[in-house]
Image: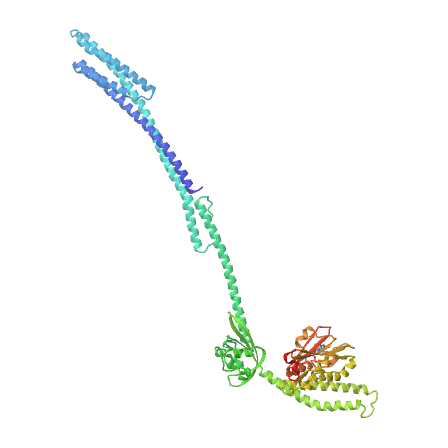
Amino acid sequence: MKIRQQINGVLAVSVLAIAASLGVTLDRANDLRQEMAEISAAENLITSTTHLRLIAVERVLYHEQRSPYQWDRKIKSIQAVLDHMPTSSPVEKSSVAFIRKNILLAQAVFPRLNDTQAADPDNSEMTASLRARTVTSIFVITQEIMDKAEELIRFNREDADAALRAMRYAIWFMGLSLSGVILFGWVTVSRGLLRPMRRVEEGAQRIAKGDYDFRLNINSTNEVGALADAFDEMTARVQNTKNELVVEVNNSKRAELALKQSVQYTQTILDNALDAILTLDEKGIIKSANFAVQSIFGYQSDAMLGQHFSHFLTESSFGEAGNVNAETNKNILLLTGKGREVEGQHREGRSFPIEMAITQSTHDGQLLYIVLARDISERRRVEQMKSEFVSTVSHELRTPLTSVSGSLSLMLGGKLGDLPAVMRPLFDIAHKNSIRLSHLINDLLDMEKLTAGKMLIELTPQPLMPLVDQAVESIRAFGEPLNVTFIVKERLDTVDVKVDGSRLLQVLTNLLSNAAKFSPNGGQVFIAACAIGQMVRVSITDHGQGVPEKFHSQIFQKFAQADSSTTRQKGGTGLGLAITREFVERMNGNVGFTSKEGKGACFFFELPIDVESNPDFRNGE
Ligand code: ADP
């Protein structure tokens, strides 16, 4: 129940109780006043009756002349008292009636005192006894009146006592009611208000100290109960929020730690990397550099920060378009890409070869270059040693091998007389192997010359198709034992290309021999020449096993073979396609292939048409 309702209830009960007590008290007070008035009247009556006696005695003993007059006055005052005497009960009424009757009687007797004096003054003896009897009668009558009056006094005093008692009880009751009301009010306020408020205060203090498990748990339906429920709900929400906050804080701490560890991890990798790793801003100014820059460029990483990256490369690294002193991103853009070989500028003043990769990225919306630089001085030294070794060995081998191969060829040709039949197969094998060996050495030497930049390639305009026909003719003998035939399907007889004839023959021979080697027995190899814009494409298509998908990316690398057993089964070094690409690129063309495993392969090269000799192709028609 609401506190206001409780207080209203208590007030209503207390007002009723006090009103009832007051009513009773007033009632009894009225009774008391009446009783007191009756007592007073009765006492007056007794006094007046005593006066009557005195008047009668004075009349008899002293012959008082004024006595009749005084008697009448007293009688009248007694009657007036009787007239105004309040009578509340039948007993009182009959008492008053009795007194009136005796007054009348006394009234009737008193004149005899006057009569006896006046009637016979000589007969004094008789008169005296009459008077005595009369006075006695008056005394008896007045005694009766006085007894009745005293009886009335007694009655009224008892009634007054009862009224007084009732009043006292009513006042006690009123006091009790008031005490009850005060007590009840106190209990209500204490239980309904003060105690819960103390608990609320305690709760507030506990929560202030961080004890969110505390609940008021006040089971009350009044306003304080509602306040306590709201307080508990609020505390529960605060606790939930705190728990969620704790979880969130823990998560973010964990994430922060993980991030820190990840940053440390990345930094450790960067610090321990052997390659120099730098970041440049959009202009090419160095923003960060790892420890490796010191061992590569000779500068501490901090010393390189804020400088343009161009200053750490030689002028030749940028080619003709670059300018080592220009602090712009133009220099950086010239070098952007992977696997570039440039020259670094060491702190000690020497230059050294670098393999470099520059990639573009963005960070916080800002353009950023990431530079990876590797000192390849050692690799270059080893390569140099290797190429020198290979060329020395190859030259040393080629001369004796040429004479061996020539001698064997002479013997097999019967120029030195007939060979015994049993020896012929052995000579045949020896001859074939000597040819294979000289191919290998030639390939090695070509490759070596190419990589060392010593290969001389002279480009002269000449018709394409005679070179193609010549290559096809020379390879037919190679295809015969394999039952492979070569068919030129499309021709471009009018087209001239600017090439080194013997190198192009080498390219064609290599592609045709590969097509024959990887064709099935009895297979056909198609050769086609067609124009694509200002380029001519020559394609060689076989129907063999094709190139495995995973080998596509490596096929033009040196010594790369899809199946290493190929060398033994079909011959070959894995150098043919690498040399082919180098030659074609040196002749300003490109090579490529398409193949599906099991469905053959189509290798092609494209060369620019010599528009000087073929003006028709000037506009790429
Ligand atoms: P090789 O002397 O071994 O033929 P190449 O460089 O000419 O060396 O060829 C490299 C490898 O490419 C071969 O070993 C073979 O695996 C693959 N290849 C070349 N041409 C063909 C082709 N026409 N069909 C299938 N595979 C080929």
